[in-house]
Amino acid sequence: MRSLLGLGLVLLTGCGYHTAGSATHIPAGISVLAIPTFKNRTHAYHTEVAFTSAVIHEMNTRTKYRIINSATAPSDATLEGTILTESVAPLTYDSSSGATSSYLITLTAKVVLTSSTGRVLYQNSKFSFRQQYQSTQDLSAFVQEDTPAVDRMARDFAQTLVSDILESL
Image (cartoon, rainbow, N blue to C red; front, side, top):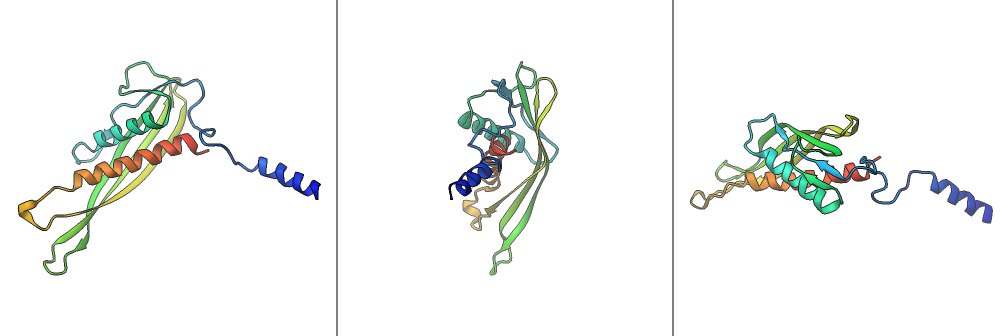
């Protein structure tokens, strides 16, 4: 019985379990991380600013790294992002008026983390996110909802990205 328990423990120690933060893509010697403003290859206005700010906030909140928002200042590694696509599509319609009542924003981004020596530490070329938002039917009280939807999507993107960089193998 003891030998079976011992064998079970040996098998469990080699099966890929790890503690939070131990599987990071960021090597131990890195203390300064540059996150320049993401590039934007879409016609959407300021999406790259929302995404960059969200990633910087998430890195500052969850890590000990000193974060700088510059590609030219000295750093140990650089996290660069590019917004590749952004689309807005009608999702639901008001049955009485036939007008669109909600939309779906879909965004795809490319993210690369590179050490100061040029070694790629992390890369995802097809990060894809979606966010739904409601349109206002009362035009006298119209509130543009797409900017808050992009901000929510940016926060979700940043949380997922930082988790992936810090926790994935």
